[in-house]
Length: 165
Image (cartoon, one colour):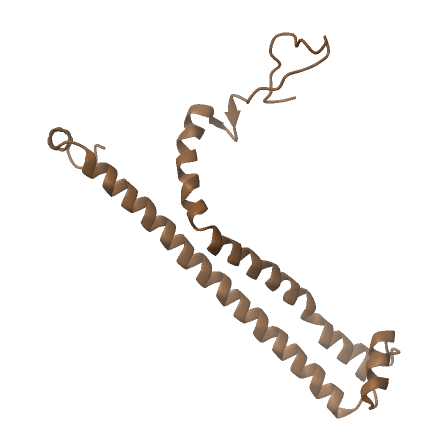
């Protein structure tokens, strides 16, 4: 297996292989990769916002998948010559009305409009959520960096010129 190496023979048998961490993870050496693990705590602090963004993304995908259905029903079954699907025929019988009536055409047009509005609202929510969450994480990194620099001695700051940190 690429990236993994087996160690000395295992006590569990001659064919058992013990896997150890690879020396490189996504092109980074493990020493460099460890430095980036410090950044993991910032998204962990924003887990509620990230969960909300995930829920909005799933809802947006579901609404986007439903968007073409009112137009399909309108073109194929109300205005076209295709027969009504079983669920639509049951709905037409329960409510009453003809398949090509003006009320059904208006209702399907309004359904398409409502789905488009809901999809747009979800997209706005996702974008605002990412903006707020991202700004919070950037601010937290900046605060931690500022506190770290403040803990350094004045002698350190005198020795280093601007930008030499």
